[in-house]
Length: 116
Image (cartoon, rainbow, N blue to C red; front, side, top):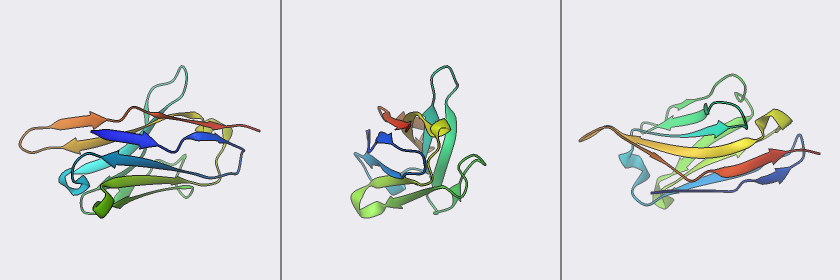
């Protein structure tokens, strides 16, 4: 359902753009987001974008990361700037549908490593 890509190795201060391609219309989901999980840590929210276009970011990434979507390509992007070593993690995309029933879909994850 969801195919994440775009991860890699980048130096501190660098940028990466992640992509999450959906197999169906992206606007059919009430929310699409990115989460990350570092070794030994719980999965945490990175960014979400609602079907209406509103976005949400936690403090650690606010001002550095931007989530956006291209409905024509059924793809959600995560632009990550000013990357820090603590951003190193596996990044997962997630899509939520609430009708007719609640369903949550996860992509396979893409590794982001920030290191000099």
